[in-house]
Amino acid sequence: MSEQSINSYRDLKVWQEAMTLTESCYQLTRRFPREELFGLTSQIRRAAASIPANVAEGHGRENTGSFVQSLRISQGSLKELETHLLLAERVGISPSLQSQPILAQCESLGKMLRALIRSLQDKSTK
Image (cartoon, rainbow, N blue to C red; front, side, top):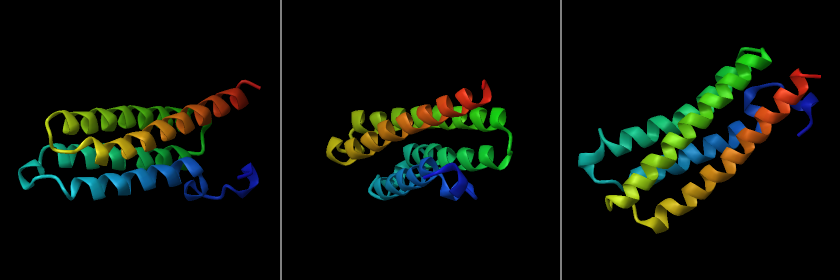
């Protein structure tokens, strides 16, 4: 997508992918035991939702430095999400077959976030 066609954070591929990841996390956690509602279910959903929310917030600030900082916060939330997903596997709440595709989405999104941060930093130093 060219820069000219970015009118909103909703036009950003990274935001779109983060929303898709968040949907996947909600679908996964629907299968979790009821007693995990205030445990891993809540933690996974909160961390996942934080990723696109921070992309949107940073884009809305209309300042490259603020946007980069918000993208870094999204990266932190992504790592937190990955950790919760791995823990859910380790304690037997989420079978690997269900969580591995989401972890692959996390890896892909992480690469997108890093690339966008590098791109913004390169532009700001020129």
